[in-house]
Image: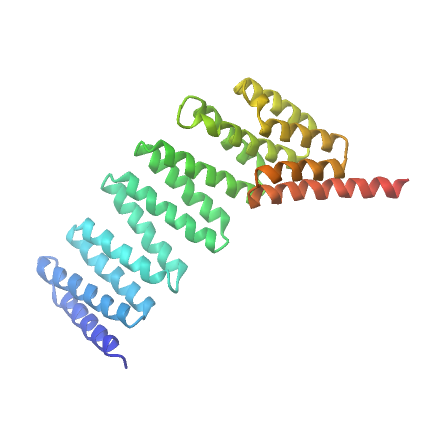
Length: 290
């Protein structure tokens, strides 16, 4: 057996003995156990026994919690999460959730938001978009408490993308429109308004309601009078016209012309492909009727 593994087992056994031998009045023994669990976890980490290392960092955290040492507990949970990331998404999320909770209790909302966002990223990697959305929403709330406006918007934009992937377009539209309104009042953020309105408009397009699309374009002009002079507005208007005319070739040309100058993000291309496929189906149905 690897020397680090042997050392890790010995240290873990010593830590357990310390806990079994002590009573609530003997805080020093709990403190000793916390240190031994940490050392044991480090040995298993060196042996690349990631699950075992993660579980022992969690044991160390539990000891620190008993002692009321929240800062030490959160550091151990972070170490545990790093180990679990190698082998266990569930273990990593468990540790990071503990980190978020403790930072909230300590009033460190920016740090809590950072780790909630990290959980969201892990869920996204695991293709669990609903889980990812929930943790990004929590991160946005925590960033808001911490008065980090730019980070709030970044998280909300990510939430909107998750709604798009979940095909909950109306929820995404609401977020994009809300962010556009908020951004208009900021010299730093107002230049992003046309992109947020474009994103909202693309979600309207995929819903296929031409009246709603036309109404949205009017709303966007009222919201930002300069929007009608932008390439993003022309792009949406031309797309809407091609949908109304059920003209697949025109739709394809409009997308290509815009993409040649401003490359579309993958999620936007996916949305537009869905719209194009619907147009193609309508075209084929009409050909069958004739």
